[in-house]
Amino acid sequence: MLTVALGVSAALLWGVPDVALAVAVRRIGPTAMMAGSLILGTLLAAPIALFVARPEFTADAIALAVGDGLLMVAGYAIAYTAFARCPVSVVTPIISCEGAAAAAIAIAFGERPGDGIIALLCVAVLGVVLVGIAGHAGPISPSGLALAIVAAVVWGGVLYLGGPVTDRLGGYWGFLVVRSAASLAVVPFLLRPAVRHGLRSEPWRLLVWTVGDTGGNLCYFAAAAIGPIALASVLGAQFAVFGTLAGVILLGERLRRHQWAGVAIVLAAVSGIALLHA
Image (cartoon, rainbow, N blue to C red; front, side, top):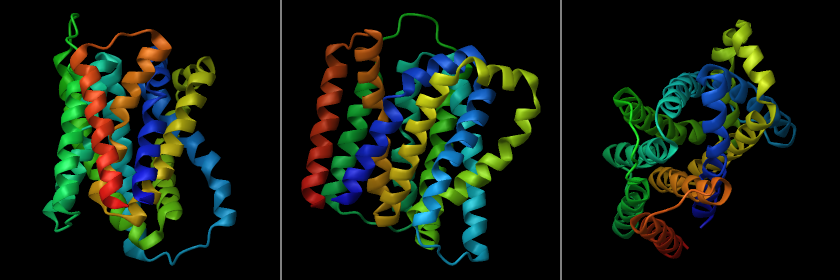
């Protein structure tokens, strides 16, 4: 049950600030947003280390975490570029399929969350797809679509690797080592004057997205530590639903009937998973 609560919390924290992320990325560029949010988020989460017992830092655990961190940087860079080129309503549902990708990887490597949960996970993915079929009338960049698809696959790998990392380091320390590796990788970008200027021009959107993204990652790594990873990853990927609802509430966007049906399907599937996992 705790995995369900943490997975849904991750989706909420990732989804609601999508509006702030999309606006900021288009104003200051994906590089500035990636570097700023990664470094600031790691600094905000670091003090928690004072209150969490340290695990044994083995060479293989560090290697896995560093690899996951570098893959995370690639995932952010590709996803943010997709947001800069395509509408949020198109990009978000595609990237949210990361959960299905991670679950598929986990199942392929032998994880069996149960037939009922697997079926409901598939239903949840169907709901996300319905939410994402917005019938956008304007031009859509083919490169943006391609980047969104690649980002979903890359993030599926990031979510999946979160499982063995948390097995070795625990939820919090797994998160901190992965994010620290990712943050160190993007420090050189801060040497660019354009990046520093961009961060100074969007402080509030940067902060809103950073707090949501960091909190979502903390919840996800905690869920992955409890397991199963397939359940945690698909629930976390329901951020597309919350992102869509944020657009309705904050930007006055309108949902079509099939999108509302998708929201209802996702909520029903998540409720069913919670009951089965209780």
